Image (cartoon, rainbow, N blue to C red; front, side, top):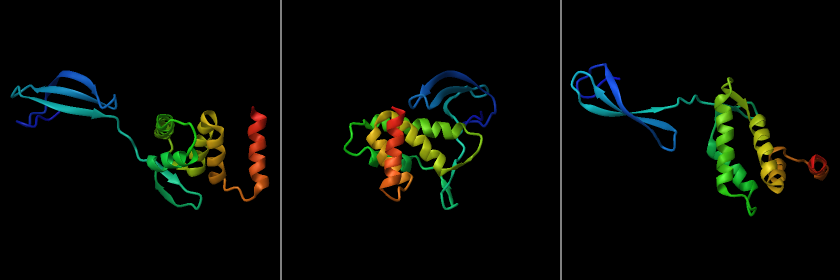
Length: 151
């Protein structure tokens, strides 16, 4: 690590501790040439994830869109916001761990539905009705029947 004071390339780590809820590491370093101390932060590299929409267009993954969709589905339901944030975190981490940087939107939708089904069935049905774009009552009833059979 290059010293910000003298530009020397060698330094040693004097102290290291987690920062920002464990999302990064704070390191206190000492320059081996001028012996001045400075702080660095180490964060995990996150590569961009591109979402392939139903119409074939591509856009960057946006966690807030994912969270807003779940919030709308859980409106007036007893689902804590922390649970929705945890689901969004899990999905985002799963997407980051994928080797493929381009993910179809339907794959993300299925991940959301799988998790909402475990949390609140009404929220699941609401999300599914928007996501799957039910055309009529029979497709909606088919989804409800499938949900009831799984119980």
